[in-house]
Image (cartoon, rainbow, N blue to C red; front, side, top):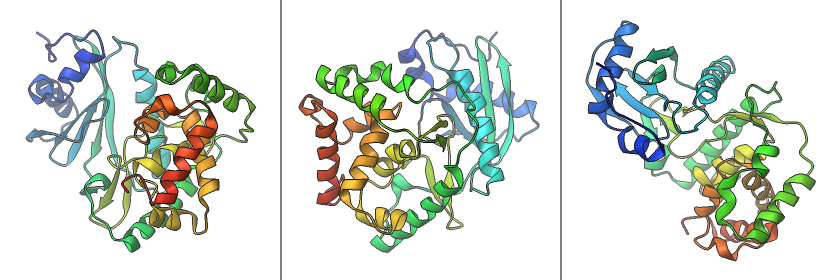
Length: 303
């Protein structure tokens, strides 16, 4: 008898079950018991890519099994190392309580972390001054995080970006322009980047601090890679956030930074889909830069 009694053969199968408390409860309770933690009520959290459930003061994250091609081992090891690094740097992150593997119907990797009390930025209503303060706080966090470090996983930000088939939905001339742009751009020294800071992965804590979650997509890459998720995903390209983050800035420079970041980012194709409904109108990198510039000049993505 398995703790997890479901068959998963592809991404659709995982998507159909990864938020199902009934399906995961035996496995989650086994994990809690393994580490002597209370058997409290299990609840859903904001969905991501892996299965995450709240149990009282803790979150239990169960990584997707290795049955449909996701780099789950890399995600697991990356997140553990990155959370420990962030803690050493004094960044507000949940405490990593435990991690391990359960060999059941599948090999399930998991980690347990403390639950952060606060509000996800996607559910906050902030004044312009509050947005400036958030921008300042996140600049401080990024300045501590985004520093050179040894490569800690097998992600090659240049080759993996060029070979990424997620861009297949764009016009062929844009794909060629993007590949040429990446190959010819001066990349400089890679730094550590979280890579997925957005409105659901950042929490305004009850203590007033900004807490950063979900480090599984961390890589070493140019700092603009960080901006590619943060600026649209949390800032929505609004001026008050950018004022806080940069102090002084101009639309042309930010548009170029984001163009570079989007072209490199492993989720860049999806992020651009949040900027424009008409991918077919993008025929080269200049077209993308113009779209970003216009959004900034009109006041943000929600204007």
